[in-house]
Image 1 (cartoon, rainbow, N blue to C red):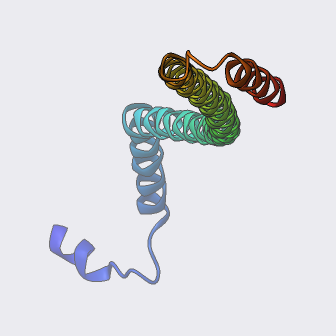
Image 2: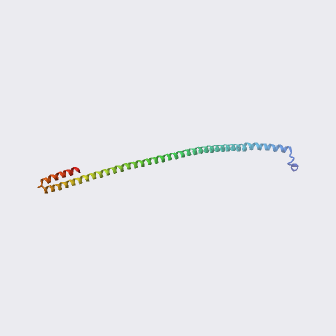
Image 3: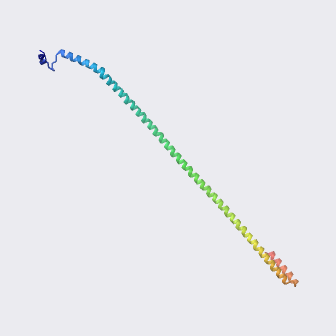
Length: 172
């Protein structure tokens, strides 16, 4: 009998009992799967969605921070470049000023040395002239003395000679 029942069974025309039991088993299966499988799967998917969203939020935050840091770094780099340019300008100005001061000081020192040399030359020249005059004077006195001694006997001639020597001395 059991076999006869199976021979009458067709999928296209199931019996009402079979539909009832299939429906009941399917509902029990659906409840069990829903409770034990879909709930944890749904929770895992929700947790994963939250994790992904939080990772995306953190990535956006990190991207914004990197953009801010990049902007700050660019600003600092520009400030450093400006500071370097300023320092170079100041160093060049200071160097030019030092060179100019050294050049001016060297000119003053050179003029001072030249002036001292001129004064020394003038002093030596004057000293030489005085010495030459003294020697010439001494020679003149020696010559005059010898002449006077030689001609001591003639008084008129001595008087004329002294007058002539006095006149010569006044002209010099």
